[in-house]
Image 1 (spheres, one colour):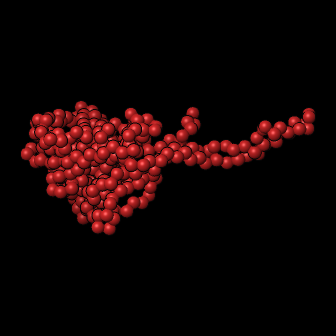
Image 2 (tube, helix red, strand yellow; image 1 turned 30 degrees about the horizontal axis):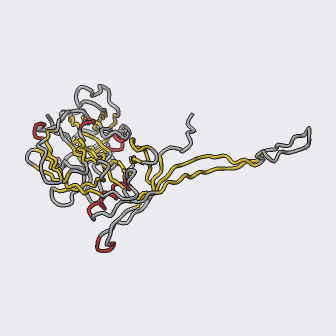
Image 3 (cartoon, one colour; image 1 turned 45 degrees about the vertical axis):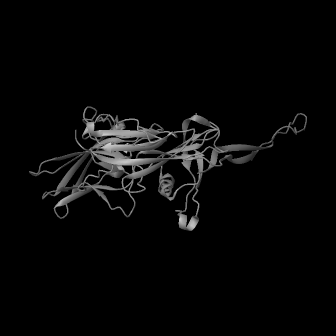
Length: 358
């Protein structure tokens, strides 16, 4: 099977076609499902650009982004993209298929473009050391390790979990398909694991498991944030210390004349001045446990994520609710300056508290 490069659509992606002709045409097809059998015949975008210095360059990430959608399902949010470029001359048409997801690049990481070499870094959490990552998990919840499983050398993908005594469970093969929803695999991690080793064609990545002890705030269940991370994959982070729930409203008032002209009386039990609730929001302040400096980068990814869900024990302890991060700034803490590292976020349910949709 072919290997498909990933486009992080929150950052620009440039594709270039070399031509001596005056104009170059580009067609984009964007779809979910199987890379071959579900590909549409009609294109979603068609554009033409005049060449400059013997080439035409197109930026396509923003166009693709309109077609990506997310739910709280771990397998949502990715789509296939076919780019076709051609001119009116003798140059052969170019066809390239990519996988698109809601990832991004920082401004120091350079531009995305079609002549970049394929990145073989397949584990989505950031590294704590070369070929090493870490994940947090609480005693009463699970977390996930997201992996970008390119459909190449399908038989070479596997992982193995190790218990607290260091004993391995045996290699588990990862089934690789050409479905867009299955390009990011998620390995479930629980508190009785010490580490997970993921292997791709002899290239191993080791993920250590940091278990948070139960405390008086998370005996009923920690708050778990699920978010689309920098790689465009779903990740999770527990917030196991104190959390506070709030209800906020916005309102206006209006006056009405309630005089009974027959009896020339007004009733004191009637609202002459009446309050009208315009919006109602349910929000929370959540706090992480004390953490190693490594997790600061993941806190940054939570702040920058545009898709976040929360498992909230006081709302629904079994289903992730869509939320928005209302915190607009966090400090990038380190042990030298801050000694102990802990983070607090304000989140808001992404719907009115009172159901007013009609």
